[in-house]
Length: 120
Image (cartoon, rainbow, N blue to C red):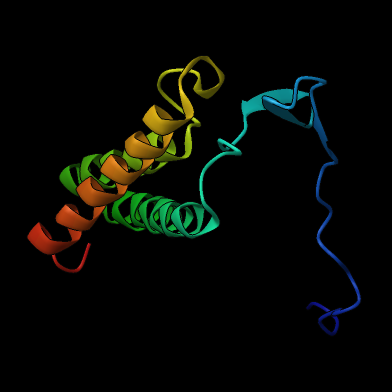
């Protein structure tokens, strides 16, 4: 039998650091591409929301064993990460206008997925 639930514990998160060029963040010794810093905050917020929805859908569909739904959810994750600059061409090698347009295009595609696949 377990004792009472302890609420005084805070989750332990690994320290986050950034490379000198500010293009990568380092978590637990692993390097990850940062979100493109030129993107407007409202666009980042919308894409981050879509990313979270996609990740959640991957988990739910995986638990159900629904391979088609997992694939669709991974498509959502990939589009959101592309829009954020975390996948695809390196954002620091592209013109700012092209990066912002890519983010907007990714968001439009994600919104189209919402219209064509309600409930996903």
